[in-house]
Length: 86
Length: 185
Image (cartoon, rainbow over the protein chains, first blue to last red):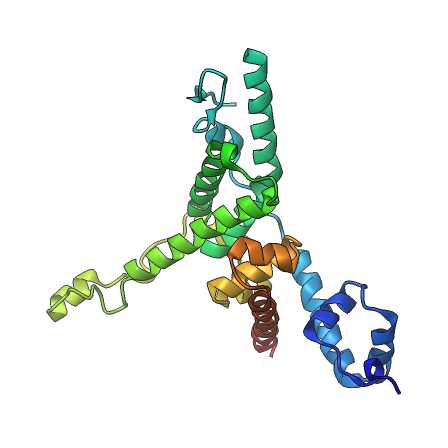
């Protein structure tokens, strides 16, 4: 038996497996090791849950509020853009 | 000249639009207060755009902006930790009356619409579990698994050795699983 078949998966390899990126040689270990399989399944569930978290949006008008305080560089030097509510 | 200025302004707007959600989401999950997260996000964008002339293109733009946002969140959390009153009241209180007068009043305020929104948005089991992580672990896990940054990028954003980032992420996932299992039992 080769080392890669006997060795348990590292946390990084488990993460790769959860993303479908684990090399085939390590897949072979996973197929025969119940301990690694249990850990890997739990990790995959958590990683998926995290990846599905909502991307929250700031309040409407955020871009305008930022732009009102940004100095727009011009050849004659930076200046503040006059504030407009869009 | 006016066209040149307009071009720059359009590019700035595009950058804010592209990053407003990821930056705001990271900050919101770090400080768990919508209004404050928005202030910190605004501060981040203003800092970045006003310093765009000093941006080094060898560094990924996303790493740069996340670094500034994370620093803003960490600075705030440190400050808040120092300012937090204990449940016994101000540390300067010397008599029982002073302690009572300066102690935070729990349960005496109704929820504002904003607080209700925060409770809805951050009330799920996974959000609670993330909130229980220490700030360094929280940033690492959010950057890795919510924003999809590489370990190397996270090391650059947080100014940490790569090995430390790997350890933090591994520990953070273990803690998260533990918190979630506790809740489900």
